[in-house]
Image (cartoon, rainbow, N blue to C red):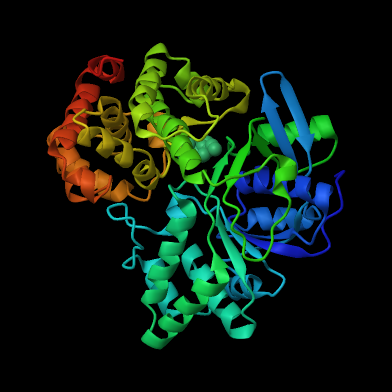
Length: 478
Ligand code: CS2
């Protein structure tokens, strides 16, 4: 595989060696190394999968990023990883990698699910079995938060050099959120250990927030064949990605950073505004498109937005979001929306509604409640947000006699068992919404106490069930 030189030494440990990291941070890191050098190789840690580390090892730590646009493909090989392994099989190695003196950044793309927060309150789910296990077994942590805390404690014990923890997941205020979860975990440790660790974190670790953006579908054999045919070599783990890529970061690094601006990253003190804009307009609307698309029989995101009614529901949702965001300076919202639709229409990408619709229980928590509450407080019923939640329930918690179709069935979600129980116990939409959004607080504690919203979601579930998704889109006036 043709490629630049692998960096001679690592400076970053990355948790979550999936496609997103390999088409995003890795690409910016290559640009930074080309422009400014530095010991910023990445040790890639996959949480459970052994396939990607094994393939990278077999390929000399190289893989291909395939940039896909309707006009054709282009190929590049970042070659920035110095090592890769699996946390589940080598838990102690994660701890020592985070603690290693040469590690100056620990970054994360572990998905919303990987933070083990309670959807209701956003707090660490200290009842979850993996978190309980990490509190008991310091040597073999299995969650990202456990790995971070144990690695940072080891660091504090052995040399204490400062380090940056960099969340690159789609969570509102992701740096702040990660810091809070780390601190909550530490507070559950025995008294003196907790006090000592918190004091060290305070003076040696920073948690900048970041807004990350690139649509990166799952790898399929189609992409493996494409690399073989067009590049003439075998790659078991290529990553397809759209041409668009954006990264906005707070410049609060405790021990230096690569020159990521060389790859187009923006260092800004407006990250919360960028995150809010992206998590709502892109991710929130993406979820709506995925659920309404699946219910309309669409397999891909591009197929879904090609359905006129789904497109107008997406536009209605964006209209609803508009008054809830503070724009970063220089951002033109009309142009931003237009660009989003163009990105979603990139049919060559093959981005599936089942991928975007998966893990909705932890994703929509980031995408719906804050905006819905702002609108309710202003005296407006957010019908399109209610429809997004109703689409989610119709796909994941289908009531007796309703078949949401194969693309909804393919959506994975850790809350599926709870949702299926709730559906089996409910006679209709309002009862289902009261159980899931009310009692289970799937959209947070605050929205759980807004019966008018919960009822609206329930009514829309019934419209979808009785008259179909198009009728529900018309019902909200989209
Ligand atoms: C998507 C995101 O799967 C999803 O939930 O909304 O992965 C989205 O493609 C990325 O955040 C784009 O930056």
